[in-house]
Image (cartoon, rainbow, N blue to C red; front, top):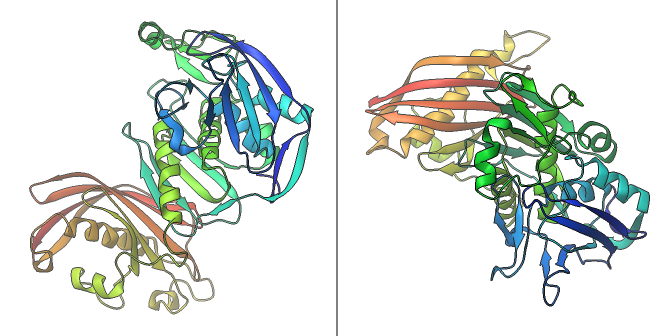
Length: 431
């Protein structure tokens, strides 16, 4: 995340402590490595000291942490995300992680001790160029526990995330962070992992959280935080964002784009990383899945009320991403407002609804003979104005579809920033 060249450490780094899930003491040594080595974990306590590359191909588990393993299962390393985040934040792209146990030390539960040790050892910039992944068009992903993501084009690396927990101490929290070296160090690195006292016994019966304590985990009971306070009011959110940095570091490249995440999880983070890799295999021009000509076949709208230009992502019966290019020639700008053109909020929602209508057309027979009538809107919010030159990116998810009546949730983005959101209910009827 710093510079355009690969980098390694100036000298070795050595840290020891207990693993949060395994409960096993381990010593971890970060060893400087040549160009193009990547991040490699080496289990020095196992016969032959097997090496596990830190990449998506070696992710074997994402429950309460990200685990890397060899394909034959002969070696694995649990909970790698804290170390991976610190390495990414420091700009380290080549290092061998020697470890004599199944899990890196949890230390104080944050990313901070790893980052501080790496920075103290020094960063050596190498000659080889650092691979760069640039998000050119919207990429979406989701996890089984309700997490959802959209990655959009941006000139830097930014993560915006929302978490939502029933516990009153957490509730719903939102934050947006430019993931640069200084921002990570000051705003994300100190944030600690967290858990709930009510779940501790069940986790330990399953062999998890064996090393968890108030020294390395923010623990919540019915009355609130059991530790001696929080480092940030939204420490829970910041830790989740730090976890995303660590998981997305498994891409093995510097990322340029804006990631917007709702209820992120390790499973969802890895799903997003894999979706980004798959998207990079497409042509850089980002061809439309459905273009204007095809849209005209499915939607009854015509100028000036056709507000969808193309569809860039489609999962049948699940999710759709569509684009509306907002130009100064839009007829509504003549009166809304002269000298200060702003796209009417109702038309932003109308464009969102049209994208949603295209999602439904794949779920019914004879779509050319049907039309979608929207019945109600709920939880509608406009976050910021849309003006000429903006590109609106709509992401809609189908929540329910029964007896020709459906419910969808939609979000609209400009340059990766949320501009509008709503829940929509519609009925599919004969034309």
